[in-house]
Image (cartoon, rainbow, N blue to C red):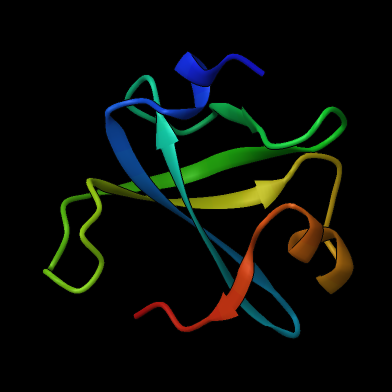
Length: 91
C-alpha cells in the first residue's frame, strides 16, 4: 500500500465494539473521515465508519475518533488482533 495513504496528517482512533469487549487502533488518514467511509486495513478487510467524533479531551492525542464496524459482519478476536487492534477501554 502506498505510504501516502497510511501516513496522512489526520490521527484517528478506530473503535469497534464486540460482545467480548472494546477494540482500539490508532491510524493516520489522508482525508477527514466521515460516516460511510470504508477504511481498508488489509487486502480483504474493510472497516466502515459508523460515526465520527472530532476533537480530543487530552487523553489520546488524536484528531478524530471513528466508531467502526467490520464490513460484512462482526469480527472475532483473532481477526481484530491480526488487523492491529488491541483490546482496551474507550470512555
